[in-house]
Length: 247
Image 1 (cartoon, rainbow, N blue to C red):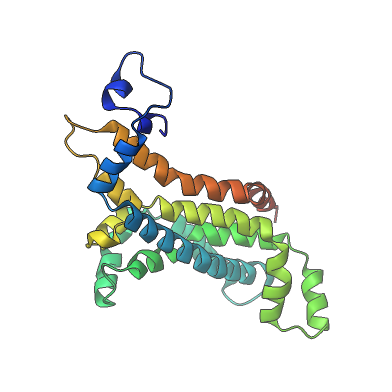
Image 2: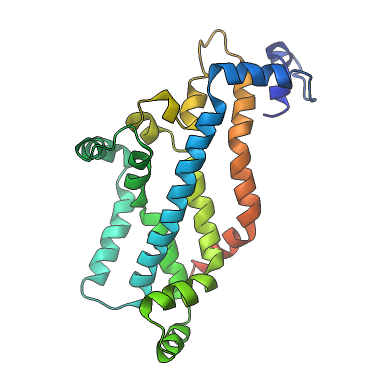
């Protein structure tokens, strides 16, 4: 994608296509910046993805902790509902979610993108599976030392499940960064558009597409995901394997 973004359309579509870095990077980037507000859309996507990921880490780890380490009435029923929600197609929820955002006066805002997607069953499932493997003896030792339940969660549990948190960071950040349909529905102002929506606006006339610009924009949009994965790759592998515990 990056190599194609440094060439012209003619070079990309030539037979055989040019597979070496060209000299059109600056020109293609200037065209890209003229068609979409790349910096603003990148900031919108980064802000939404980071805030969503931080809130997801807190909520999903707390929910997984409660479902794995506490006994309370209706626990299995609640977990059954969480798992059952994974079978509901996201498309069927867009209309009621849209009506809900209207009633809450949140349409065309960052929070309208973030809040509905915090109900993610997979995140809760992943954290619960990792919490099942966490030694209960460490929690009991903390209680004996007088640490409260909140302190146990933040000072003992979370620091010892970093691989699971790393896996959750990659999954949630990537899913929000690439999210297209829901932001397209709920966001109406161009200055709030995320990168996937901005990239869709580049498609243009099917008979006169500038593939070099489109591929350059796609390469730019992919870069943050690669960086996040390179940072958390070890935790991702360990976290996914840690969730494969047998009850």
